Length: 106
Image (cartoon, rainbow, N blue to C red):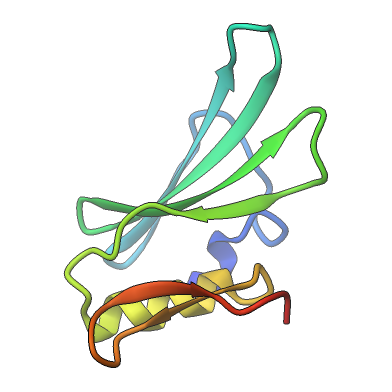
């Protein structure tokens, strides 16, 4: 299965779902904030590192993406995250040092 399928628009969200894609996996979790607002989180894990997550708040504008870690900054980290994040406005770059940069929605 392709890493692109980690995206919530490709594989439907299901609370407590865990799917594996080689050394990558996704984990879905519901979260309720103190004000009672519920949100869905899809964590993106590479080996044992949470690299980022998609989130959907009931009062929000659909699925959003936030990065969490650069991992080891490897080519595998870069290629995987860039495939997963495509269309969400972020790129994982390694030139000089590993980092995420906002590039706008593509």
